[in-house]
Image (cartoon, rainbow, N blue to C red; front, side, top):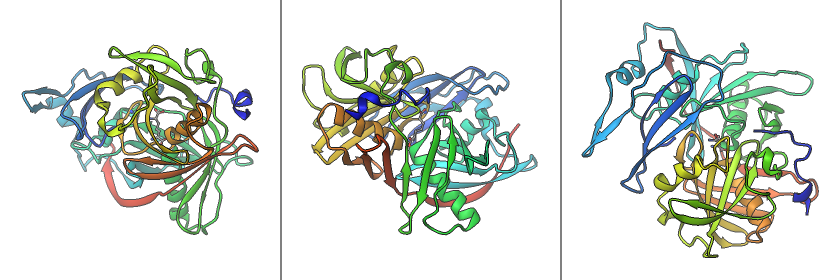
Length: 373
Ligand SMILES: N[C@@H](CCC[C@H](N)C(=O)O)C(=O)O
């Protein structure tokens, strides 16, 4: 199988929530308290940022008491906009409800917004609200790339890649430059070269490259990527596949007793998601996809994202879902992944081992925001 050869060549290519209440940012550790509208429970997740940027330490976090949300004054002060400060223009784009603040950063090599400020801007109550901030950066090598994509998750951590995000980035630069439809963009990411094309019909088709199926490069300590392995989470045993799409993914189709997931919407993601995310078998933490098979060409998937929590869609997660599904014999190489935010078409080509992801990316609004203190 092509999967066996996958990604020897690919060097190691390496969280949100629309339900999110608030979060605090520290220099090295971030804590997010999240609640999910589909269930009443709340959970906390924390991550170490791969970003080298730092800010003054803030140890505040939102607490909840008998349904009451307690927001520390420090967060209220930091998140509030002060238009006497320097402000910048931003655009909001979304791909299947996975939404991002886009910044035109093509004039400077340094992102205009710090990871800590990005986390505050992503807050749905105290900021603009988004699953992440994406910067259109200058090309690191104009002979190879048109642009570079830098992205911060909603907790301020920096992932290697984002599938919905790269569709939004392509549509963003196409809109800014009034490019003809059909143009392909060579984008440099921490996962290597990724090539989105904004098609005539407005859909964006992306050459996502080849999946990483070498466990230590995912990175995962699960024995290998060629089959599923048992993982115990909150006392329950699941079967999981490790797949790398530049960023790490843990894909779950069934319980260890062989029982397939029959209702993804019945799972308590805010409870089990953070445990998968920080599971010892994924040393860089992980995104986790929970999958219900409809038939060989269609699955329903829900995701718990590293650094962003329960989101409406995850492009890299949809790709990893199909890769794991093919390996396990659950789906065909061409498969529609139905996410809470809508469907993504995924094809894992046998001929060159590459994955093509096709889906929408739309602008929602633009505005101006203070850069913060
Ligand atoms: N949370 C992810 C990065 C974002 C993934 C994304 N939403 C997608 O569409 O692929 C991570 O930390 O790896």
